[in-house]
Amino acid sequence: MTTLPRIFPNTSRVLSRTRCLSWLSSSCRSYSKKIVKENDIVLLKHRNNPSAPIVTGKLRSGRKTTLSATSNWRDGIENDHIIGKELREVVTSRKGVHYRILEPTLAEYTDCSPRIVTPIYSQDASLIVSLLDLHPTPPRPNDTNEDRLEIFEAGTGHGALTLHLARAIHAANPPAPIPVPIEPTEVNNTQLEQNLAIDKTWREARRAVIHTLDINAAHSQHAAQVVKNFRKGLYFPNVDFHTGTIEEYISRRMAEPEDPFLDHAILDLPSTHEYFEIVSKAMKTNGTLIGFCPSITQINSCVLLTKQKNLPLFLEKVIEIGGAVGGREWDVRLVTPRALKNESGEKKPAVDAVGEVEDRKVSETSNNRGEMVCRPKVGGRVSGGGFVGLWRRITPFSQ
Ligand SMILES: C[S@@+](CC[C@H](N)C(=O)[O-])C[C@H]1O[C@@H](n2cnc3c(N)ncnc32)[C@H](O)[C@@H]1O
Image (cartoon, rainbow, N blue to C red; front, side, top):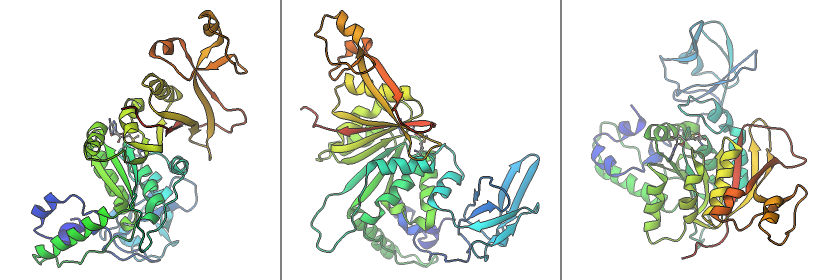
């Protein structure tokens, strides 16, 4: 049973009206120091070889953690052998393999926790967060600035990037309130209502929020659990999880009497380009839109669509990431080859070293004749897996 129903029995009526009790189940327990306690999550690192470490689930007494479930090598460890040990101590599995007990870093946690969808790996997530250039300031007494930093992410997936983003904005929010505990046997709806009201007030006063959306409810729930289980929900209150389509979410927010509200948006889902128009409409001028695509041709689709629809987005950079720290920058532009320009009898424009003319005003027809430049920038480093495009929202949409 989760902590929440234990604390608040007979609450389904109230809870069904309230989706945002996020922190209640996560912030009631004290932090472990060096001794591993029941319900902690630990990292088990093979003592003698560099194989991938294992992130356990919440350690429950009397249960075991599976270390390997392959048909020719099944191994596990009793949780009671881990609970009560100090961090850095060594435990031995049923098959006699030694593991060191550690507290997982955020990167280890997102990379190694059990998943149902492929996450953005931690070094790539860190790079994406750094591209947003976030500088959250802590709340100050008498601060009259009511601006809220809002970041939109789709899809949520494993919650790996969500957790990196939530950590990055954490400093901006005041400490989340700790709810008054209610005895499991006690029927105390008044206290529950008070806790809910405090939670609601705190949420409305947040100075920075990650809105993360996934079309798949199972992915969203799994990701919420991933975020909630890290360091006992430390970053969970910074995130609002949404399930549904991007169109539904943005249209609902834009229907409220609200100007563009997003400071940043990150898209990691199939057919990224299809969401550029609606997402960019919700973005504040100067905000960044990041598309994470597995291939450079998908970045191209975004570039072409931006031109075709004349979206107020400027492509600042394209970076190849994965397997390398820092990433390699690519040159991605829509150009008209010189031969085509001459053919049309236009005045010869300035040409770059490889005989291409950058096409700043491209109509749908001319797109068919233009070509994409896609190449690593000279002097770049190493290769990798995915591609990140960073666009900046430049001017307002014309009315
Ligand atoms: C590769 S995963 C994202 C991984 C995530 N960035 C992370 O770091 O863990 C892609 C996610 O996009 C979701 N998705 C696919 N199509 C979608 C859509 N049209 N709208 C919202 N989410 C979508 C999928 O359900 C999946 O969970």
